Length: 100
Figure 1 (tube, one colour):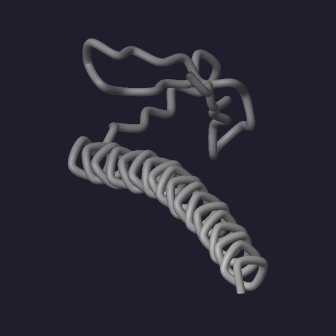
Figure 2: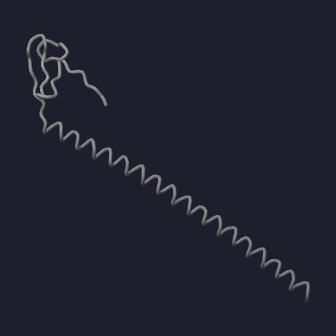
Figure 3: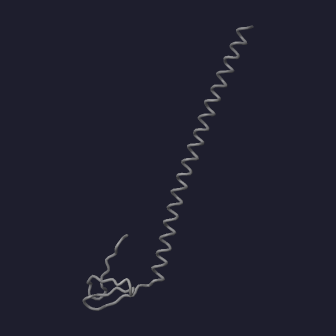
């Protein structure tokens, strides 16, 4: 978790956080800041959406890699089969020509 250091707008001192009362207060000048829970919730929701997009994007990349690997294997098998068929046809032609 990333921590953010808060400074007092009045005197520049570090603010103390009271999470129970949802306020930040300056121990020197007494300045208080209230947390805007709606804004915090919106930030958390957007952060979760971004996280899910990143997770889904990574999954899509992995799926694409797997599909590409399968396609490459299929192409390689097809090429080997084609080469075997050509070799078999060539041998068959040689056998036929030798019998003539």
